[in-house]
Image 1 (cartoon, rainbow, N blue to C red):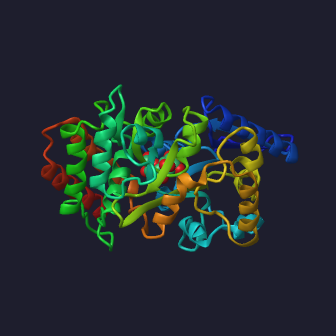
Image 2: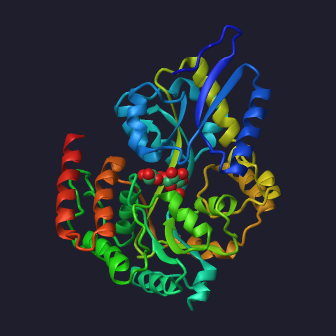
Image 3: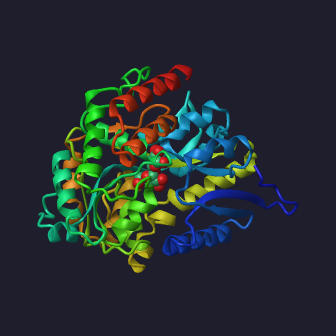
Length: 423
Ligand SMILES: OC[C@H]1O[C@H](O[C@H]2O[C@H](CO)[C@@H](O)[C@H](O)[C@H]2O)[C@H](O)[C@@H](O)[C@@H]1O
């Protein structure tokens, strides 16, 4: 940790995941919260580092191993056990009892950061994936925006019609780099009842008809229908940019993309809707939280927990929960997001949220209703390593017309078996 106890007794705390300058509204909210927190806690000096996305799976382990990680750092749910396994996490168990709000967080989220009975992290948000689409483009393409595609065949048909609008409009976009291709491939496979590893977590299950079907659909959309555009190796920011500028019909995403599309990428939220995952079987669920550097001092851990309490764990307040401020800045409030809190804390959060809701909730109705029929399926073990392997498969299919899908899946299956065997 590069945070020190200064001679004047101030605890210096490095934290990451500050929104970058380009995310103007969120950056302003974050800076306001730092000022408010430091005013309340004059003995704590918060040193924020910005990043988007907040975690880069490609550099994460090296940053930890090299001692470069912040005192309080952002993690995906998929990282929790891994960070503990590689002995880079501080044990928060003795301190968490001082954090009253910890008990208000949903138990299943707390469990994600509890390893062998010890607490190593604080959950922040959860998500389930759906299909974000542009209602205006649907109308222009002669599609009914109130009846979004429910199957992958329907996605394919809709994408073709949207791409036929021309003028650089892409029907359906998908990621294929920075582990994001593997992540979406997993979601697409889940949506049709498949999986990437066996139920006991020992064997790959990607050399299967279900996985071949996912890739064949992507291949045909890309090369036969030409509905996925020619630019590939896309990452989150690319699809958001395309959707925000009105050049994309559909992409897979969680509802937390909607504020980004509106606040940063120029979309109008009446145009942006979200449907349940096509396929009808399951939707991938994930989320994030914070862990502490293994070298953090007790003072830094205490200060960091106070920081998280202020930023994320005060219902109806803080960086994400100050819905009144969000509304004043015309940022969307009332999105269909899974709940973080339980009991009275949840009631308070929901009450403040509803009082400030400003989004067209009918645009999210299909997602909310459809989700009730879907299995909520968590990400696989060793997710980031698997996603890295699967990135290679998806990127090959989207960049080479003659990609050999059978061979790609056979090779990926072998590599995944190796990862699972070594763990
Ligand atoms: O919109 C949902 C979330 O999407 C991103 O997180 C996910 O991205 C990873 C791909 O690198 C994936 O491996 C991970 O497990 C996911 O949770 C995004 O970074 C999050 O901010 C966002 O909530």
